[in-house]
Length: 127
Ligand code: AMP
Image 1 (tube, rainbow, N blue to C red):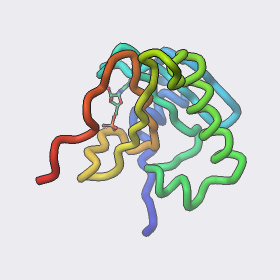
Image 2 (spheres, rainbow, N blue to C red; image 1 turned 90 degrees about the vertical axis):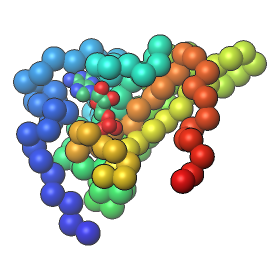
Image 3 (tube, rainbow, N blue to C red; image 1 turned 90 degrees about the horizontal axis):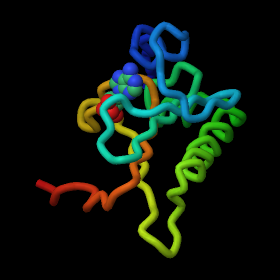
Image 4 (cartoon, rainbow, N blue to C red; image 1 turned 180 degrees about the vertical axis):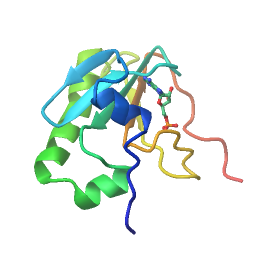
């Protein structure tokens, strides 16, 4: 499968500085910023700076350095938010939507970090 990256997507524009964002963390290969329509009290998106459409594209073609940086950036944001699972009510959910069935709106890989309230079950029962 050859992925076709659209460099006019909104996250590409954020990375080029054409659209502002509320940055939470920036690393060499990744950027984390607050979601503009938060679905939970804490809702941060983490994206690689490289042109990857979705997780599969990233896993197939990103460099090891990009993959390590991105994976660590997700963990770093969770620590910054103070939502590591512990003895209280903490915890978080990671989601990365892809394609039509995943209902991906922005075709640049992103991981949603959701936290700050009980998030309920992940999905409704399968149909
Ligand atoms: P997805 O459906 O997984 O592609 O999610 C895309 C997410 O990007 C949604 O949660 C949007 O609220 C979020 N989003 C869209 N535009 C922006 C923006 N300019 N800044 C921050 N988040 C955005």
